[in-house]
Length: 581
Ligand SMILES: [Zn+2]
Image (cartoon, rainbow, N blue to C red; front, side, top):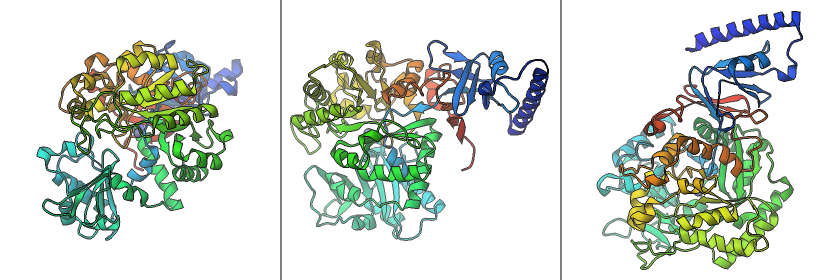
C-alpha cells in the first residue's frame, strides 16, 4: 500500500469509527475514555515474546503504553475510538523494540560524524582504494574544509586483500591538506596521515611505549601510519571535546543510529565521568529519543558518585538511567590480551612465549572492587573474555559474596566468549547472566582458530548450552567494534558461520525465537526492566520495531537480510525507513 492509499484507508477507517461511535452512543455509552487507544496496529504479524500468547493480530497503544494485545476484531471493538489511528502493517512484522545487551553508546555520538569504513558486507572498505574512495566521498558530501580533521572508523586490517595495508602515504596522497585518522575496528588504534601524526605528536623520535605498537616505514624510523594499544593513548587523551550545541546535535544523530537498528534502549558499556556529564547535559536539554543505560567505570566510581548520588541511580530521568557499575577483568581474544588458563598458540602480542594474557587488575584488587559494588547494592557488569578472566571473577564473587554465594546480585558477564563448558553450571549457581558476542563467529573466527585452536574457537559464545542450563543470556554487537546491526547479530547466533564461510560450532546454534528473546525480553531482564519492556503485553511501554519480514518464518540464512522498517518509542515513530532526516 502506498502512502496515499494508506491515508485514504486511514480516513475511511476513521470515518467508519466516527459512524460506529455515533451509532454506539445512540444505543449504549461510548467506551470509557481510558479504554480508547491512540493507535491500533493490525494487518501484520505481531510477535510478542510472551510465551502465553506468542502471536497476536492487533496491538493497541495509549499514552505510550500497550493497552491491549489480542485478536483483531475484539481489540478494535474494545479500544477503537473516534480519534484512534489504525495502522495497517501491510503484512510486516511487529516486535518489541530491541534492547541493547552491550555497546559503546557514547562512541555513536562521534561516529555519526565519521566515515564508516567497515569491511564488506558491513561497509565499503574492501581494500585501500575503496577506503580512499569512501573517504573522498564523505569529505565532499560533508564539505569538510581544508585543515579540518577527517575521521573514519571500522578499519579491519585482517580483511585487507593479500596483506596490502593502509598506510600514511596512501592517506597523504589523497588528503595532503587535512589531518586524517582512520580508527581501527578494535577501538584500540588508528592509521594516520602525516598531518594527523603531527597533530597527535608522533614522529621518528617517538619511542614505542611498553604494550604499544608504532609501525615504522620500512627502512626508516618514520611512523608509517598504524599506532596501537598504549601507543594510541595520546590520541584518546586528545580527543576533541564537543561544544554544548554539538552535544545535543550529536546525541540525536547517535541515537538515530540505534533507532535505525530498531533499538529503543541503548547501553553505554563503560562510562567515564566526563562522558556521563556530557550525557546528562544532553539529557537535560531534551536530546534523548531513546532510553540510554549508563554504567560508570570502576576507576571513575568515586567521582561519579559525587556528581551522581546513589539515590539517583536505577531510575530513568528524561530517558537516561545509571544502571550499575562496569569492571574490566581482561582484554580481547583477537588482540591476545584476554586472560586464559592455557597459553595462546601464537604467543603474546609482543612476541611473549607461554603467554596466557593478563588480568586488567590484580586479583586482590578485583576482589575489593567487586565487594565495593556488591556493598552498594547496584547491578554489576563485568568485561571478561578468556576462561581465566571468568575464573578470576568467580574468585572475586566467592570473596565478596561469601555470606551467600547463590543470592541474585544482578551480575552480567559481558562477552564471556571463551566460557568453558564446566563454567556454565557456576553461572547458574552464582546467578550470573552471560551476555554473549556471537558476531565473533563471523568476524574473528579465523583469528580465534589460529590463536586458541579449533576446539576452543568452536565453543565461543555457547548460547545453546547456556539456554539449556536455564540461563537467559543476551547477545550484543559491542558497537563500534561490530556494526549496530541487530538482524546480522541474530543471524550469527542462529547460523554461526565465519566470514570465510566455515561453520563455527553448530551445536551452539540457537533458534530464531531464542535469538529474539536474547535481544528483547532477556535484555529487559538484564537491565531490570522486564516489568516495562521486552515483550508485547498490556501495561508495558509501547517500544516497538517493525521489520519487513518475520525472523521466525524466513530461512535462517536470510535473517541477515531482514530490514528495520520503523522504530517506535513509547508510541511515537522515531525512525521510518525511507524518511529523510
Ligand atoms: Zn565493549
